Image (cartoon, rainbow, N blue to C red):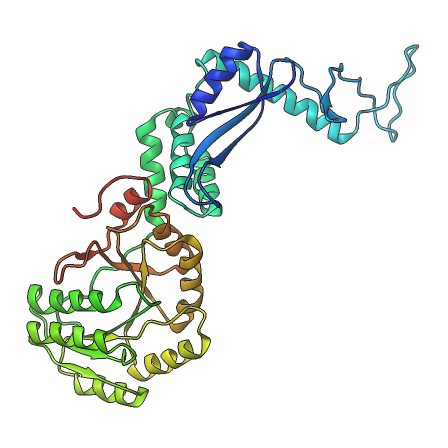
Length: 386
């Protein structure tokens, strides 16, 4: 029987089709997770693809076909000649052939085991499902491979057979890769700057932070903006400053920024809003570096939108992290369709998450980042906006 390929939304369903068509002795030749449907690589859904054969002994490919052969006998090596025998000595099979034979036996045993389990891999079912979820969330492939591989290594077979235990293990691993930094406590003066590309919500986020520190925590706050490229953004921030009743200064040069920070030495928190920069604009990024150096900031928060795609997030981290960013803020959780960006950015940046935003309302829709909640988002749980 020629090999056939089956597709289903879960591994268990694909294996069930194999068993129904080919019987209990079917041999699993290959499995993979593939995206089907969509347009130009966008959209679609992840499917499990299983290639199987009804033959018990599956030989290697030859001219595009499978040919049933008996395994040849293996003789001793030339360095130690075999004992004399009336039977002719046969040549040892090539290494590639040996690998094929061993893999064939492994596939046969796996297929038999799956048949006894009703077509579903008892100790892998939940892990397969979680792996598919990570891919559907647009988590980078190397991160998926690392996480799933570590789960297999660190959990016993019995533990992998427990869905809740497997999920908790994976959640913990994801949370470890999304570290968080608690906000500075009262009495600790901080100079904080927000940086990032255009359109991620830096100005709205800094207004939320100002309101949180001043109104909810009772701290004295000062605002500084160097975003002179967008008059509307400056006016927006000035309106917020007047409502909260905190001072706002607009600066045009690194020297003026240094003076403004010094003038606010009596403030508990000084927040600096910067102009959005394209990750590809090297000249303006260097200008921004000069501003940050003059301000002598304690914390540089890189603001990343959860709604951006994997490539955009990677460019943002690669170009803004060298500016000295040591914190991460994730915005627009309410607009994101997938949440793999959170994990991708966390791994790539190696910096702690400080805050997340879940909407446009000021002073609401902002909260300190929580590793567990973010990990649950990556695994598909609807915990944002709580």
